[in-house]
Amino acid sequence: MGQYDRYILRQLVMLFGFFSLVLVSVYWVNQAARLFDSLIADGQNVGVFLEFSALTLPWIVQLILPVSAFVATLYIFNRLIGDSELVVLQTAGLSALRLLRPVLAFGLLMALLVALLSNVLAPSARSQFVQRQAEVRDDLTGRFLRAGEFIHPGNGLTVYIRDISPLGEFRDLFLQDTSTEGVEVTYTATNALLVRSETGPRLVMFDGLAQTLDLETGRLSTISFNDFTYSVDSLLNDGGRRRVDVRELPTPLLLTADAELAAALNLDLAKMVFEGHDRLAQSLFVIFVPLIGAASLMLGSFSRFGVWKQILVAVALVLPMQIVRNAGEAAVRADAEAWPMAYAQPALSALIAAGMVTLAMRRSTRWRSIPA
Image 1 (cartoon, rainbow, N blue to C red):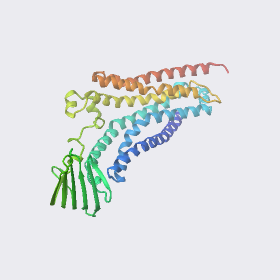
Image 2 (image 1 turned 180 degrees about the horizontal axis):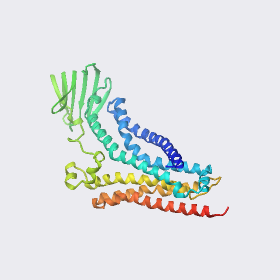
Image 3 (image 1 turned 60 degrees about the horizontal axis):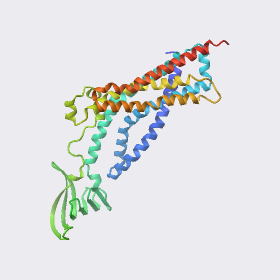
Image 4 (image 1 turned 120 degrees about the vertical axis):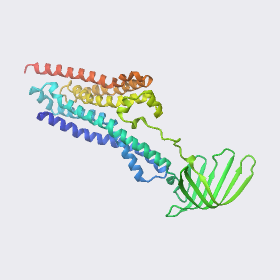
């Protein structure tokens, strides 16, 4: 690798890191705000929020990476043109293909990074995220351990606890259950404990009173008890066995999936097939994004007004690629046998990149042929 290649590649990597940090931070803040609200509403602490935020980072980085690579390439080549460095390099006899060689190396480096994220880190993080999400959802302690306020841990359920001891004992508990239509049941107890059992979590109340009000007849029944066990299974909305998320499955399993496996996992076969091939397609797509940006800017020439026309051309060529991906996804999800359509986006980007590089080479040849 020559000195020019190292210089351009170093600049691309540095700017890519900067733009990735900025874009990931903006996107992460947007996601983290919603995640924070949902976790804190369930009574979880900041540590759980930070853990969940970290588990979402691989997916966010994977999503942002092609954009950062494209913006970094535009910035570097715009600066090369503005500082007349590109003109000097062309005067020295470097062809357009030679000038774009470090950009291709940069694209291959990005492809390896996307492949690592989409096939290894993101599925692993997603699996942990779903598992921890189920654990947090099943953890009723965070929903109940709030003293001195009325809380609603489930539909039709209102709970008030005056105080909570350091050992987790509830003192002066009020619980109202209106989940059964036409009936309102109110429990009051001096002490209570939230315990786990083989059949699920239970709320055990001591020295209390149960009042049952029939809303239709207005009849009120009261029962005193020394201890009473209240089932809180209805608060768990997991629907039994945890549902498998297709995004947490390994790529080889997705690529070789059949109808029998999809039925066993309770997943759509077409969705599994598209997810597996899309991971590979995204790795290929990011190779050509920097090439399109760099080649588009090389079609212009030095101007005090900049190369904004070429930048707009590059953006216009890359942005519609998401539409192509969406069309490919729709085709594969309609028919799993149409899985080659998952590669429509990288295939089209390869054709566009080849066309732009060819135009840049022709322009470079014409520029060198002009007599001094």
